Image (cartoon, rainbow, N blue to C red; front, side):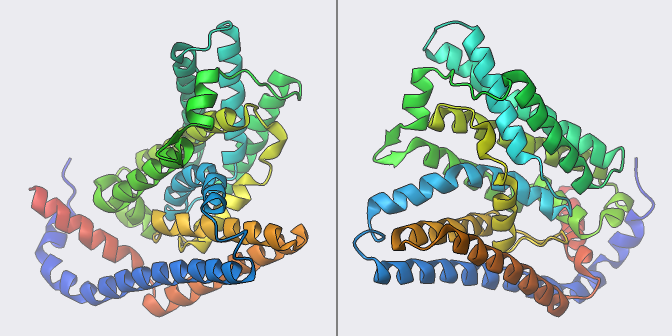
Length: 365
């Protein structure tokens, strides 16, 4: 179906593109500058703790521990970044992680005492399918039922965790094949933990998907101006469902990795996972108002609180102060985002993404 709005757009595209180009350049430059600022902040934290405790902090084993602690959060952070870019939110990721791990563990336990890759692969697929199902449910309720994302994911947060407790009666399950634990949970390749490698692969795929594919372009465009996207023919509802499904898939992946690493479903261990991930995403520069965000920024945003917590533990600082500092970073990141948005543009944010969309559509033709 050809929209009537295509002719006016194509006829005025050169003029509009000239008018919008300065804003596009400013937005891109601001994003790059902000990403660099976040990296410099993290490096400053590393230098500070290295000076205060060079023997304990500035050690390859300690940096490996930090990477391991961030790995599962980074996997969740990729999906959360896409959701927040659309202008949504996901409070259910921690519960979906737990539920996926529970279902996977139960299936592997029912398959008998097998410790081979056959059982492990079935468990992995079950966890991925479980997470995707919850993501599809979130996406359908947000896109089709028009329920606000916060309410939807708050509801599925409670539902997923409640069902996990019903299935296990509140007792952690520990059924995981040794091959899964040894290869994924504690395996290493050239000294690098396998779960860190998995997280790195997910992050790289997320970066490429967001910045180099039509899927990423549509995600950003929807976050900038969903109504304008509908008028140019983008299936906004379908895109939202895909984004939430992808986030659910990654939560399922995190669930089976969590099961492999802890050899337990850790039902009570992820009550604040959603807040930690959202804080990292926002600290990394993704706007809570939608339309702007980077997966790389999310990774650094997750590294900052993880490094702070690690350094505080080494220095013997009380855990309560850790939450204070992380909270201060979160509030500061939101404030910086508001200032940046006010300085970059006033109401024309969606047009920059749409101009890129029109440009790509003309090339395809």
